[in-house]
Length: 582
Image (spheres, rainbow, N blue to C red):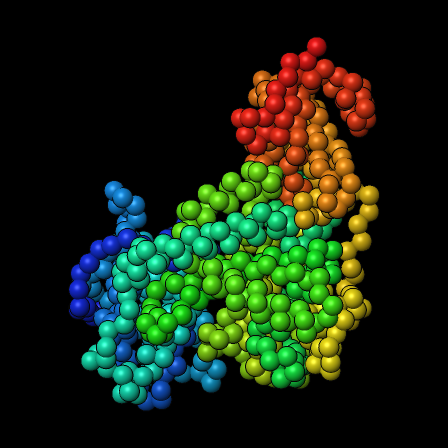
């Protein structure tokens, strides 16, 4: 909705580019297309937004001309996306009509509020990426002078680094330090061709092998917490997204000292503190986080506008003696993740599915560390206090369990936490993780910190498993949750039992009653894997034993073993052993 005092008109500009062309998607575009297809139209992650820096005295004509010059120079801004006979394609138009919303609004002392209001209006309508330009511009003017310019762009056409490029170019055009005569940049169609070269294919194959190795031993969940009736599979309140922003001048000052002592980057230091807190809280010394990588190595990609960013996969072994050692390990993990972040999204999804089926646990993107501190929007709030504080807000359409945005590391650390399930991660847990990270950084500023002291320093409760928890396949698994999954997935009586020694040799065996729908281990396993998305602390059994009936006491494993066996096996392949019972 427009404000009552807002007079809006649309300026239409003809923009002529250098070429009209069509080609396959880049790996980054294909990756973005895949995950955007799972989001709702209003999901805030499907679009990226930017507030441009506008020099004082900029006229509407000059601002619109600069925006048109951006669309002329960068082909991704003149691209539509389509399904072709051999897969999805991108089509670059030579000539487009660029609409720019012009809002006649008085200038305000604090321009950020107005800019965010304009962004909200641009985001209200869904994008039709097969017909429309993948971007929208809005300009606020008083008389003929511009005092705000904003953009909303589909994540299929641009990532945040791209918006930084557009923002710098826009200002340079207005300042006269850039022009249309500059050398043309590397375009998405050029990148797609390089990715299909022998070198590009080898790089993607290597990334797939790297991911497979980590996915084969990653924990079931980044932060296992006891399930309650609220989180039951068969009911309870709906999941509610929740977000909190930690603002800490103290942590930013601590990073000055930590980086001087360790030689690490500020992002590495924050990641190490966060990993230490997560490991202490979860009782899992192997922390695996998805981490979007800019994928902009090389001179040609410095001025690139397109979605190059793809997920990296961070594998952090927190079983280190002290914080400084963990910082170095986190730096190595970041480097390896970034080197292996260019991949075929469809091939990786197939690998995800294969490993999920074999391990009996979803390969969900439940934990994410996204460092945007080097490309943060220019509208961040100024630090008005020397005290650490947390801002709370509620996002829309968010589903990830844990997402950490490293927004700023200078002046004040801004670390944003978002969860898609405030039932599983209530406010107290979110606050504990953020403040715990802040406290670890503050302590590390005065000297190296033994990791055994993190629980006390962070003020968090270390994971303390009881008899319901079992460490199986690199994960803390709650047996009661496994049985809850079995009840939800299987129509007949079923019960899971833990066999073998922990932590290395324990497995789960499920005894169940066969029926019309569940006639063999493979069907039982598939049914269980489908239901696991509803639980963060359960895995599928490693073995299934099917019986004609249930014993009088289903909780008695010996009673199950005394029953006839119709079939048994791991359910992972058609080679599962089947036996006809007596």
